[in-house]
Image (spheres, rainbow, N blue to C red):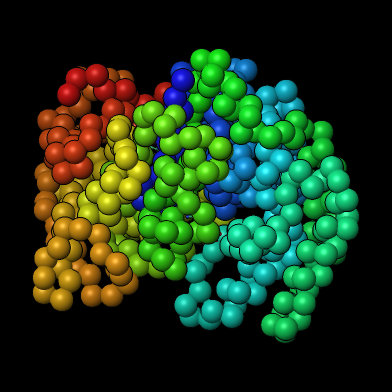
Length: 422
Ligand code: GDP
Ligand code: IMO
Ligand code: MG
């Protein structure tokens, strides 16, 4: 069997959690392969809303196996909070969630380092989620990291050595901090983590594939936040692109099947960094209000703008997208005209490829498309789509060269329309 991968194509928060939950009944396994609690994946069903950060979004649909893969960075304290809340609401995790021994642990001092590095950057700070993501991946790559599997052997010694190294850096930076409370919660998280199946998940996943089981990989963040291909340095510290599923789970590239690329009908970004189609006017405010564009975890205001097809085409290319999923269509219900950026003007020259640097002098070139001016959130099938909406879909499919297979018209699991006609 092959693994299918579902990825954000923009700057994150596209609606990955919702769609993973919707697609889970078609799979035996759902696996996270990168990122950590910087993610906030929202799911809504039966009047309940859940926000998942480290736990895969396949946890609510029957007895599926959920895997936290080796490419993920895990904060035991936040993991415990998330898992205990789910267990309290009746979702048993211990039999269904397995965790890679090779996943790296986010330590309390990683979070402090995240804050210290951001403070040191001053005006050019990344606007990270403050969860210690960058410092944890830095330790991984510099071969200093602490892994989940270390819990089982000489853990306290390894922890103390890593902590001492971090303390020295913070001392050199003259950065004041107090981790008394967070460290206590962290060690409680460590004890809690020991109750789970800690395994070499690359063996588990490949064995399951050999047995004919199907796997859906759940991306976090989005392609434009990828450490190699995103708007560097305003990115996260992992490979959010499709290739990340191979390294983050131990799955060969030959085993990748469908790649679901998910995007909003417009575009958002949270944190600092360039965003060519950002709107600073009342149109941007209207999108933010109608789309409730505030961070799922931090509550930070998301920056809003029109869809950027230059960036999206680039993401489709890097990820090898085979099926597109358009989210938040309902948010644009009430616009007379919708704009789509089809190229950039850079120093007077019009380009349609994504350039090395989008930080300055990039002016979006738009086409205008008539809006549908029809409420979509109660629609059940594509037969109800207004003509203007179908025109928007056809335009996007033509530009991106990939069919839009799923359209989302609201946050609830039920507000999802699978398209059959093309
Ligand atoms: P993720 O990080 O990609 O999983 O996305 P987030 O959960 O951070 O942000 C997506 C937000 O949009 C959440 O609040 C969802 O409940 C909401 N949402 C998802 N799909 C739709 C949709 O089609 N319409 C509307 N109005 N909201 C949606
Ligand atoms: P989901 O999975 C949106 C952004 C941060 C910051 C940059 C680096 O919910 O789509 P980090 O803490 O990773 O070092 O921050 O990346 N960022 C996200 N933006 N959605 C996310 O996740 C994000 N995870 C990180 O705002 O700009
Ligand atoms: Mg999110």
